[in-house]
Each structure stands twice: as C-alpha cells, then as structure tokens.
Length: 297
Figure 1 (cartoon, rainbow, N blue to C red):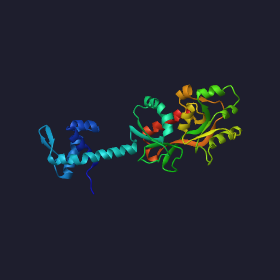
Figure 2: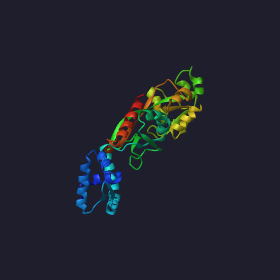
Figure 3: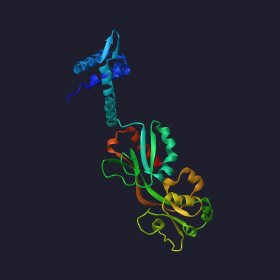
Figure 4: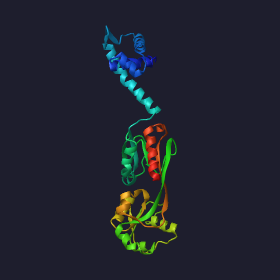
C-alpha cells in the first residue's frame, strides 16, 4: 500500500484546521511557500484539488473536507502514540496500592506531592489484597511482590513493627518494668504478618527477637488486619505491633505512644513498580522519586 508523503499530510491538515497557510507555516516552523509546495504535492498525488482558490481567499473543496475528516484523527493518533513512546503520557497517573498504605501513609502526604509536582494528577486504586500489575488496573503500583520481568522495580522500604498503645494504657505502664508491664494488658495480634498457622505469631516472633518468652497466660486478641488492631489500640483496648508507615504525625502526637522497646522486621519489602515500556513517562519517574523521598523522612 503506497501512502502519500507524511509531510504533505501534515501541511494539509494544519492548513485545513487553521484555515490559514501562514498560521500553518508558523505552527510547523517552516515557510509559507514550503507549506504551499507540500499541499500541491498532495493534490498531485491524489489527483484532486483540496482547496478552491478565489484570489487571496480559499476554502476546502467537498473532496478536501471529506479527506480532512478522514485523516485528522489518524494523524492525531500517530502523534499521540509517538509521544507516548518518546516522552511518556503526562498528566493523569493511576496508582494501585494497599488500602492501609493509602489511608495511613500516602494520603496525608499528598499535599506535598501537589506542591512539588502540580502537573501530576494522581488517582488511587486502593486494593485489599495484592494489586495485579496490569494496565487494566493502574499505571504503576506499590507492592511487596513485584513481577519478575518487564517491570521497573524500585525499593521503597522494609516493613518493621514496634509495640504501641493508647495514652491511657501508657499512663498505666510507663513507670513499670518492661516488657513485663505489657503482659498485664491484652495483646492485639494481626493474622498473617508472619508465616505460621498459630494465632499470635507476630507477638511470639517479637518476643523471640528481643530474647523474651511470651507468657502462656497473657490475653491475645486476634484481628484480620493491622488497621483494625490499630483502631483497637487507639481506644485503649490493648497493645499492638504497628507498622511504622501507619503512624502519622497526628497519631504520634495524639493517638498512640510508641513503647520504648525493640522493633522487628517482617521480611516484607515495599516496592514502586511500573512497566519498562513506561520508563520514559516523566510523571511516573517524578512520582517514584517523590515516593522514595518520603520513605527517607
């Protein structure tokens, strides 16, 4: 299939859209005579006149109008596809991430993102489980299980836990020996933080790491999600192990007290992930840079 010269198509489309040879020349950064020459070449190639000329004025012919309607969208699609590969799509970015990370860690920081990068329009797709790294879901992802190939994987942080409680419980234990004072209150345990079938595995691992033995008689209450355990601790229903990203500045000042004991890593690392084909998408690169900056603070 033989196609007309692309430059001739560009010149014709610009003249028809702007209704001006001079404006088309300015937009394409060429001379007006060059535009006229390309339009003439297209007319010779097609064997039809695209414009009817009357002195200094001109108008699209019926064939020209029909041809313009046919090619304008196609040229726009070619331009957009080329820009997407060359520079990446700008503006709107869809980020998929765990709900807890979004609510407690990311959302309180979004104003800083808007201040630094006002050109980025970020929409969040909050997932209860592991986000599927697919274009149908989002453009980029925060996950602990990054794909093995065809993705850029950028490390954000390693998850670590430490014991926290509400202000009321803290007033009861702050002057008592630790960790013994903890055993006098319910321990709030989150399932699936560590491998193992038994409930309370998070607290057993924390005790083991600190050289303690979890007393058999201690009360352990179980929760399916860390956010639920955190809410229970906030209302002085017990002591929980909290991921550091769940502690906002307001939480540290008003809702929770970090008990001065050791912390433990869960073995989960969080990553910012996006397809290698999007590696030149400048707004995703900026977002990744900003996320890593937040993790260092």
